[in-house]
Length: 57
Image (cartoon, rainbow, N blue to C red):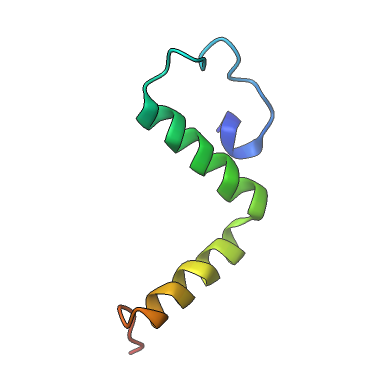
């Protein structure tokens, strides 16, 4: 939740010794929270439509 809201309350929990997958998940979580969820959902939907992986009803 700390990385989602970008408040920095996880200091001491995170650090350089974290596994790379945990770093990637925190980075992705902070990016999504910074851009908000609606634009991310629209972006994913448009990419899926272009790749013909998303079909309506």
